[in-house]
Figure 1 (tube, helix red, strand yellow):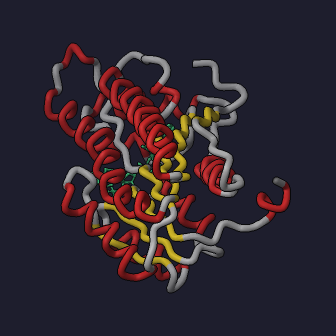
Figure 2 (cartoon, protein in one colour):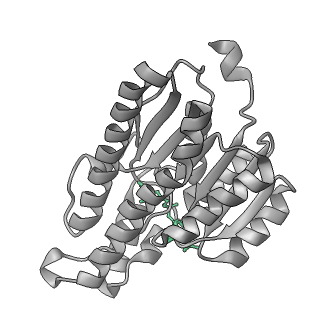
Length: 256
Ligand code: NDP
């Protein structure tokens, strides 16, 4: 077990939402040893600059996870450039905070399309390939909001609960099927508490934007994106027969 942990992860991974925050930190952590990384987001200039900084093994692909064709193109690029996909980190997400009493239906649609359908498209883009090879690792970014419901973020919490359910459903189906085909595909859900990132930028309702930023800044000892990237490295480096199903990670002093 120790030997396995000491070995740096050197596979091929896809990271969605790599233009900032947690996704960018994961790309920075994995890039030095990965055989290949395909980093994706809507802001192409950002991921292009990041890729050129990280090295030739990092390829940027513009992608809106709400669009299945975009997500498929990311997976296709990984297969064309590196010949296989060992892991996908379905990280892209938004948090359009506003009281549900405001009935911001457009925000609700966007949150569901990005945080739920984006994850499903990510899974569908790699799963046939992983099933054919009999291994791979699907890592989905949920949240503490996938376990509890906080005021002003009801729909966000619903999407993060859905991500947990989807991960569990996938894990169940894969392990059931494994009895027949022997696949060793892993599924992990990451559930962070407050991480200091630009997530509040995705709030479209102005009064809530400041409120969210204040809440995030007010958490003493809030985590950094690098803290979550370390968790991803840890789960990727477990031995082939060991699967971390869920990882809850929060600032020690977070009380909300
Ligand atoms: P950031 O806002 O820094 O990063 C969000 C990333 O998602 C960006 O790279 C953004 O890229 C991408 N993204 C958003 N919408 C889309 C889309 N439609 N298509 C493709 N990419 C998209 O926030 P975080 O790093 O904090 O968020 C990353 C994940 O972590 C999210 O799923 C979030 O819910 C989760 N999380 C964050 C916590 C926190 O406290 N920060 C706590 C728990 C979970 P671009 O705009 O270029 O498309």
